Amino acid sequence: MKINKSAQGWGLSLTLVVAVLLLGMGIGGLTLYLCLTLCRQPAVAADGDKISLKQLNTGLTTSKEQAVLEDKASNDLLTEQAMTPKRLTDGTKEFDLTASVFPWQLYPGMTVMAWGYNQQFPGPLIRLKVGDKALFVVRNFLPQATTIHWHGLAVPHSEDGVPGISQKAIPPGGEYRYRFTVTPQMIGTHLYHSHVNDDFQVDMGLHGVLIVDPIGPAVKKYDLDAVYEIASYKVGGSELENVFTLDGKAYPEAPALRVSQGAKVLIRLINASAEESHVMHLHGYTFKIVALDGNPLAQPISANTVNLAPSQTADIVVAANNLGAWMFHCHVLDHLVNPGPYGEGSEKEIAEMGGLMTYLQVLPGKVQTSYLAACSLTNDPTCSKP
Image 1 (tube, rainbow, N blue to C red):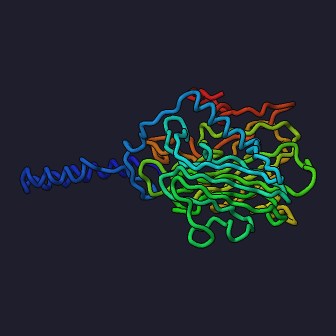
Image 2 (tube, one colour):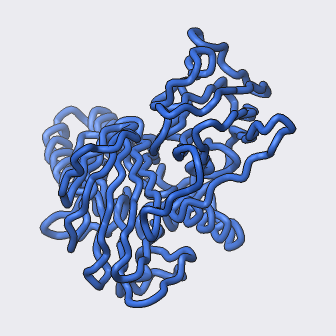
Image 3 (spheres, rainbow, N blue to C red):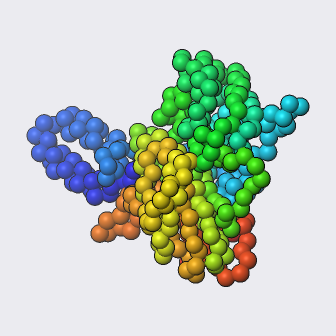
């Protein structure tokens, strides 16, 4: 959702013309009309949504220390650094997930009060293996009830996370324990998310990535595995999703992926947006789509774009043989702009890049895997990220 300045200009011109015509109604009529228009004129988006520019200022800021923690969480997800579970005496893996409200910077100048797990947006990466006995202890410190649904996993009915059907919703201050044994059906890339007040809670941040591996020793098929979880947020009082993130950060802070030339790279894509579909496109390459919704494809598909509806996942493989920093972005192009005064751009204004945009940087030799803001690979003088 973006601000349309042209619409504002026409609205103002029409207001002045009508005001002149209303002079015959006297000062009272003129004053009433101007108050009903100029005093509360909204900003109008190209998609018809209306927000106030003032509402984009949340009044929240992010400290340098918090920014470092957020960048690390984003990079940990990108590089598949999973949450470490507790080991119980019977071998069960226990994962403790606390749902709460906390500040999170989506992009510079836009810090919001997110809802999420373990004070992360998105929640921590969970990794399981076939045969694991899993226990998830979920504590709710939100102002409303919630649950967790294990999307795509054929868990027992009692563990499915649907309030009023498979369980009672977890009330504020409450706790719930989900238990299941991991089966071969669950192998692959998946999503976990709230199933209470779904549209609101998911877009506030109650979602995360879950990966299930086959039984047995890990088999290294790729030189590098990476995760990009796509998510959405609503700012400025919008009814529509208008901020789009990769691993919790919108461009210019979305994490870039650096790989060595010649590497075979698996990228797991997960659409956690509650409403919007996304079409991810990689410049400079043809990749292979090798799995959809966690299910391996018997015949991988060659493509340079992949369409992801809400909750869908896709695994793509890139043979990184083309040196350079290659743009990786959503091709629904209004998902490449953060809310602001220039909207989607016009003949007079150039909209700044934002949203679902990052880079796959292919370099000779060994590369670092620490966090790198996508804007760092451009000539953007405003980018201060490492």
